[in-house]
Image (cartoon, rainbow, N blue to C red; front, top):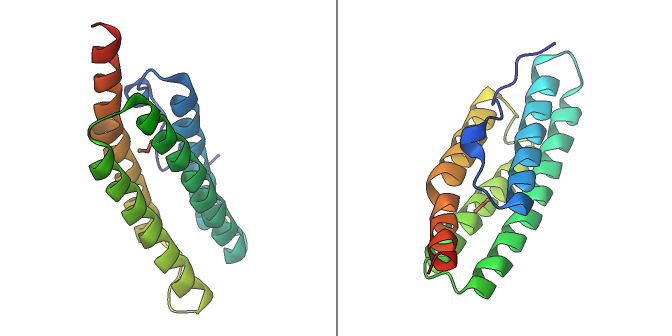
Length: 137
Ligand code: FEO
């Protein structure tokens, strides 16, 4: 059994079930990609997982953005920027990958782990705090 590159834990829970489930799935995809990378599987299997991660991140960001619009969250613009910068990075990486200019390595996965952890803990919690405040008014 391979050690996970990122361990899901309670600190990731923001308290909005739908998004917690999305985040947990993103973490699972990262661990699967890591698992494929460090075992003897063909490299394409890691690439496939990264494509899946990119697609699922797009789906998750879309759901969050829609929700933030409905909730009239004031930090929406900054949050959107973070999402699109992540998508741009991943698209660029995948393009380089397809063109043979990049390889999936531990550096890429570490970047993704760091980005996701920081985003959930420091950015997604902002809309959660806003929502909690709104509910208690
Ligand atoms: Fe859960 Fe803003 O991504």
